[in-house]
Image (cartoon, rainbow, N blue to C red):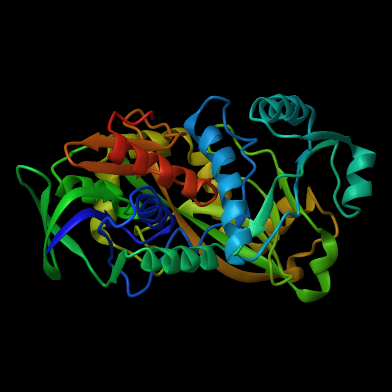
Length: 401
């Protein structure tokens, strides 16, 4: 079959790209190929659920720009399609003098990114969140929480109404370049696609290799594990409450996140996953482990961050250790208040020098675009990122990042 635009991956970025292509070019043929039996089963539905404000991203970066733009688009789309959300705000707390300096930098960065952060003293923290302690704080009213699974479902409805097709249990196995476009093979009828868009998330580097692009980027999976507070302790906060993230490992830190069902999640503890879809310690993929070990960037990352890794590992297997970390923010928390919750896996690009890729990575080859790095705030930025990809395809030019 002939298709103008073939999108590999039915997560939020893939669905947003399909939606933006159909809006910008009505009547075009768009087909989304999702290997799972349902859309958005991985990062899109196993994320923090947070609508990120963009305050933590360097001003001028594509993450900052697309997060802020994407948040506005997200709010508009969610309002029109009744996607559940709550603008509960976020409180970032400094627990030491060094963190206070970092908090002031975040304040300036937030202003540069067009936000309206408010600096709080320790007493003002108590007025806003009585159970939270800290030397100072930063209030970000633009942050919130959303049902991102419902967002994916709403996007799927729109795609189908606009004439697009979403094929599930469709696994891509090979791609051959033609004069114009690609012949794409898999467990589905042969597709002749004019343009391919790789939004495969945890497997995006592998899909890139299927299309002949042997990029230096390597996806390393990090699992985030959460606890949920018992019902009787769920009144300890109304907003997202967090410490300042590690500059080198931004997904490591302590956070309380209210959920739309009234529960409160605590976490994540971040550990190396032993499979790309390794949502528990029992999920082990030898091929994934072998390829991680072969990557020089992964080996450098581990050697320079083993102390942080050990701390996170200890929290995973000791509820008491994790409770002590939470008590720095909310002293009332006890280990018996914590009930094991869900987990998610972050697809993180690690560069050959062992550092994390901090920004989105979008690479373009003839008749194909690869989205190689779109972790947090990928869900918040999905509509803006999808629009960026659609514009590059429809109007030409190299990606801006």
